[in-house]
Amino acid sequence: MAISQQIIVSTVKIILLVLLFMQAVTDARAWQTARITPNPVVDFPKGCIIWNGHLENERRLLVSNSPESVTHLDTPVLWHDEVIGKSGKVFTQHRIFLWHANGLASTGIKVGVTVENLSPDHSLTLTGGRVVAAVGRHADPIKGVGLPIAVGALDIDNAQGIPLADPTVAPATSLTAPAIRGVIGWNLYPGQMVGAIIELTVMKSIPSAPGDLHYMVRVVAGRWGEQMTGNSRLSEGGNGSGLSAMQVKVSHAGELMTHSRGSWAHCDIAIDNRTHPFSYSLNPRFAFITFPGANDLLMTRANSYDSQHASIDGNAGNWGVMYRITVYVTLPANTSRGKRIEMRFVAVNTWSKSSGQVNPYAGAARVNGGAVNTIPVLKWGTKRNSTGVIWTFTPLPGNISSQTIQLVHAGGACLPVAIMLKGI
Image (tube, rainbow, N blue to C red; front, top):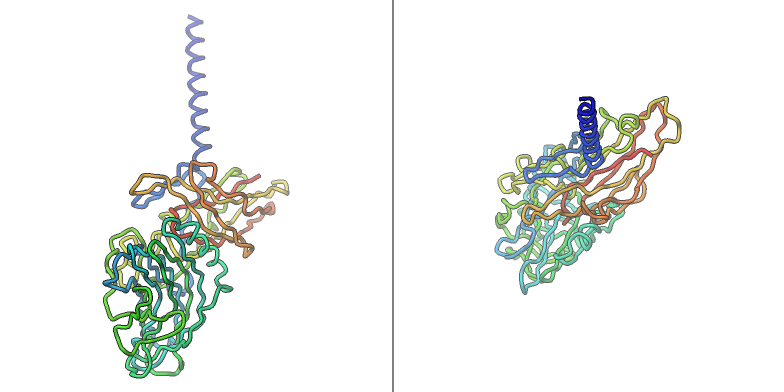
């Protein structure tokens, strides 16, 4: 009888040890279980901090990525943003993210940006133009195109200016000067693509001129070298030569696609964990912040200008957006000095809707206004699933310290990515 009891007790102990071991393995790998579903809804792992973001920066954002591949030129306007200014406002700032490929088999195309003045009362001046852009193979979008513009976007104030032969856009009723001005454009061979982030200010040439701002920004496509006028008055030089948009409706070809297309009133997202700071004592090993997720899907079809023709998922990838992420860390007063926190980026378990394959992430980031760090192509489940340590800081015991991260996603890469904080 005593032997039977000993066997039962030993068996129970073994079962408990196995359960504890399985729980430990589950906890250790918890960070690998984060995933984004096609809805998308995010399953956050243990240790992940779920923050809410909000839109900031009143620079308008135009995202033109649908259709990604231009396969016909029947409707040359790929996307647009109509600006109807408030009374007394004399200028509007813009950021334009465009991502398009030449999908024609044997025809070169030109993709570019135009501004049309719809006001009969005053002329416009295009100023403050900056651009980061890359042209590469559509078959290699991340390294050849996405990463260069993500890195450049974090330093766009020092980016290449946009040389305009004439920055003036005449009133809509002018018979002697163009009311549509080409801003910048790129020639693409078949199989090539262009990605670009453009910042531009459109203002009244004379601030006191009558009438409110009313104009249209367009992303357009036409044949290489074709004079896309549609109006004998339209002929301009500079980088935008031949990109005057025809008076046609925007292409609806990609409105139900998952690629992003829309225009929004803000261009950046701010997120912080002030209400739930990362605590070294409570979670000394890791914490996670995952982007994009359900907490930062802020640019939707519903809140886009011309929502009827915006893509059904809005700007689900937050393309063209700069994140400002403030990480708050607390260290108990009784903690010895010298405790450090490491920060790195980690690929998250995502999959392609079409192929079911795990997809990569890439982007660019910098911490506290320092050097720009390239986040190379990361892929969950491989040896290249995380960056090296990009930042190390030492919080003071008894205080809450903060670190500010700027983050831009690289076009062509799947999302999301996680920021890992690890106490050492």
